[in-house]
Image (cartoon, rainbow, N blue to C red; front, side, top):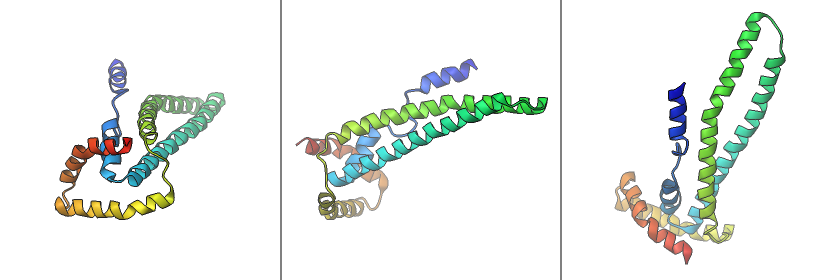
Length: 167
């Protein structure tokens, strides 16, 4: 059990999904236009928010199950089965707590990035679409469709993309 606790502590703050760098570089900067970056932030944030809500309601339902299993009095076998079910539910919580921590940290990063953008209307977003798709296809042609080269290009352009947002 000590090894599991050691691992949980060691990896508690290591992101199992996107790091801040990944979000800034590959979720936002790779989009190449403000509208698409803004949209990507929203998509990622709402995905995380939905996952957190599912966890919240799942936990509430688990708590009801646990309460019910604790109150049930049946055969010795039923009671032992219920004790195992309770243990199983409670043991899984440390991992889901870690994922919740990751989601909250990722939301903090994404929200901070969101706040650097002006609010973008649908019309403004639509007006940028031709620029986005032109850049996207030009980039794909330039890199012969090599996603690795495109990712490297995103890393190189991250700083200039952030500079454009600040202006």
